[in-house]
Amino acid sequence: AQCDGHRGALRVLEVLNRDARTSFQDVARELHITYDRAKYTVKKLEELGIIKGYTYLLNHDRLGFPRFRVHFQLRGLSRPRERTLFEYCNAHPNIVHYLRLLGGWQLALDIEIKNRDELRELLREMKARFSDMIVRVEPTHLYQIDRYRDLPIKLTWTAPVVS
Image: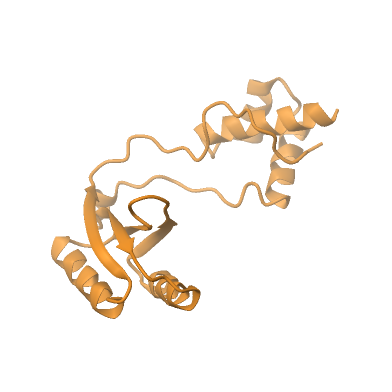
């Protein structure tokens, strides 16, 4: 039964990965399980913190807030200074994602802002405030997001037991 709990939870996540708004009834129908089992599994995944929330996909350009992804090369990061940068980004109303990276770039920010001039101004402000850390900045306009998934289509690793 433990293995079935793993497989069952992974199968539910695969269905929700395609469309997070799928109803319990549709999950049950697709996976050939009962409605109660589908509901229980989703609720258990939420309780375990595996499912943290549900979201939707926006057309940022139509909203008047195009999305930019900005990569940063950083140097001399101390924990307190990095915390200050994170808190700045977290408090800024236009910065929506803070992604730590490995490799040539150490940070990527997703920024939703009215236009390139406002983006340039925000980046100037950040470079001035964090001049001891920011080495290089490379912004890119994300003009279209075609597909969004948090997980591979087929899940094969071991997840916490849900039974």
